[in-house]
Picture 1 (cartoon, rainbow, N blue to C red):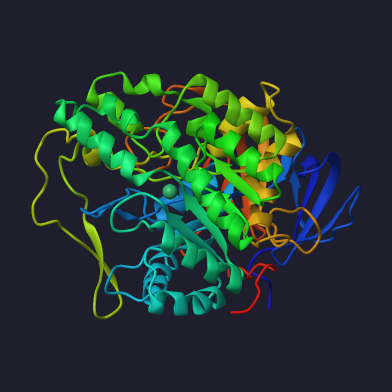
Picture 2 (picture 1 turned 30 degrees about the vertical axis):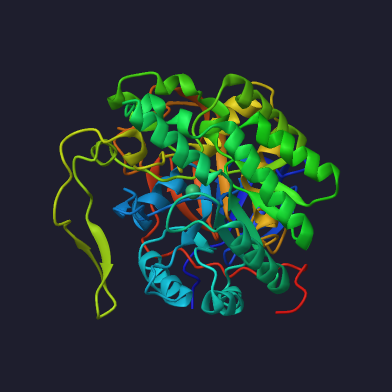
Length: 494
Ligand SMILES: [Zn+2]
């Protein structure tokens, strides 16, 4: 039987790994990298000329929210598993890790199976999940083991947000169980009480416009929560990964704990590296586009994040892709909810009552920005071309380090023989002006509208299959595979 996809040999490219760059050919057989070297003999293989291109391991975005019903109103993020993963592929991302968040009446396993059933027929690239540790009781603590066995070896802990957050005693019990079973905590660190208090104070003063959003989410609250989390984690001697670090104060806290021997790592998003809080100082129609938590901060914070990324304290660049259309941001209308029917199918249900046609108060605007497609080009342009980061460092923090952190290495994030042939052939001279009208994200704005970046993928391969060529997606829905991830070696007993 002929293989579905022929052998490929990529010649004349500049290979880029997390540690070096070198000119070499690369042979792909049966979806895997099978040889790397000069002048590979590849009879029968399809030749790809990568002259002038960078050949890099495919990007891994370990923080995305596709088809995600957010908050009490369950407003669904506007990219589903098809549009979101197609957009990711266009931008050079070949693996995503999304989240499973169980409803009160669901077991974690039921929630996982439902999420898998949404993703499987649609995803065009490989994907995995983090489990939201959104309740601490005997049932959930017992489920940790079976969730890990199902391939989910990282758990998201929210320190803020009603209905999902854990209190300190819950965090300790969660960390204790994760340590025992060998799963990594990924933590959204913000001080919940402070957000609530400041939101109330601003509401009482009649401050409902979006410009007040960052005032309710101060960097000090993020730093305090990070300090508290690391204090708890240190008692249990468990490594932790801090989600979407946005502020210099948080970097300082992480530095201090790392200096004392605590294993702490963190992720940073392009929006927190490149945009600042002045964007909130606009009319709501514009400012609402940047509502996210943590919010955008100052230029000094941007600089501290670049520095931490350069030094390695922050090791993953992720997007926290959670797009909402302008209508959703305005609250003019809810998107359909996706509901699981008794026969197992997923159907979009129209909401019963559309929201009022007005901008809600800042704390009611769905939080999140699109970014799944623009991560690697932004990092290449603003990292490599400006001299902030080396080319290998960009590969490391968009792919290799993410694979290592989340148990996917060396299957993903590597150009070594045996690795999945997930590759980006990046044209370092191709300039693109970013616009919602030409990006593939299912969102009618991008926070980077009108920005020109130089460096864009010319070809993207997933397990040896060319899925994007010259700006055209040529893969097929459902070709993406679920990635089971192994538990971490720090497990004690489970
Ligand atoms: Zn997120």
